[in-house]
Length: 521
Image 1 (cartoon, rainbow, N blue to C red):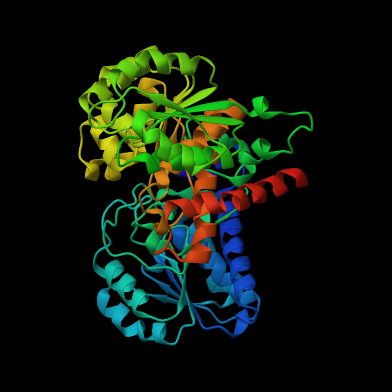
Image 2: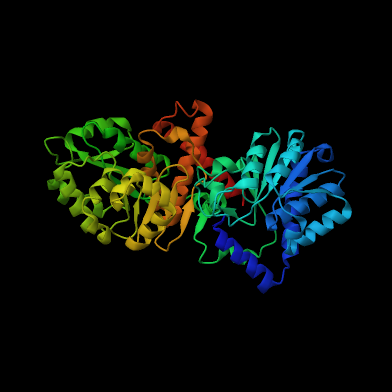
């Protein structure tokens, strides 16, 4: 599902009108009709509802006028509060204003704050308020009459439906730029926009759905539209039924280089997750004195003792042994629980310079890379990095606040520059590809903000990468299932009590749900 900026949406509208020949009034009609149909589905006795439609003078207001006409034609008595003089409403919106007037829709012109104050009492009796004040393109905070109207709409207990974007939000940022309608439901027209899916703006959106307004589908798959929401259907080819004559070698041998004194759990969780994700074989290479703890954690695991430092971390002298181990493996996970001890850093720097296997780098592996960033140019292909915002900030040399604020720019730029796949973990995890595409993950919940969930993800990514050899699909599917497992776990434990091992416990159910869907096709 594409996620568009206002400029991209306007260009698609232009192409649809000028190149395909679908007139603007037809698109406006389609938009208003789709909103009306959603209302019909939500409110079985819609003609009896007291509906107020607050319209601006632009095309968003025109969409609201189409809704008013359909409500009127189906027995309703909607009231339109137009925040403009009628003569200011032009173009397609003006056409629909004339039609609505001609059939008898109640329309009140409101041009000043004083006039609004005389009419706002109508809001108190409304059961449904439709927000059609602003559409895409707003870049400045709502002020004056508009800010007053937005504030009064928010004070009501009516069901609030926003057409396209809650008025007051910008379609090009997830930041709150000023007063904005807090909708219960937002109907995105044609495609999702940035505030529909990213916080804090999404908190104003409520539930949201995308209405098909008959935009030609090929305009929505254009190569310059690089932001997508991961769709479940695209992952299904990875979960088709396994061949009957397969064996453990069919599903790869994963090497996990992880662990240090006090951090053996990271290695254990990555390994368990990899096995649950379908890996044929998993070997954990870890400091010698850490090995017994890890070996006892899961009987299916293979383990390899490595030279260690005095502080029980992997020593630089372990490099020859690890290089030999890597030769027979299909993919490598590097980083969970390693520590950043000096000798361990030397080991990581040398290893990533020499290895030529598919490589997933997580946690301390990323922190160590951040100390010698020139090695990013020498990573094998494919390489997948899975930082959280703090680790990504270290890689970039910027603040965490900047990462969170500019992640939609930073993720694709980093992935393109170094030719790697980047998984920026967190709410709405982003997966960036070397070609500049970015995918937003829809699954997961706040209960997953707990230690160890990243280790689980690294094992899942490694297992899928071995089995399917498509790094982008492997990352997308692992991230999706990781969040889905968290959602299933939260249903049972609640978010507050959720721990990382719960994700592994519920991973089989999450996988099975995709397998059932894949086999139904």
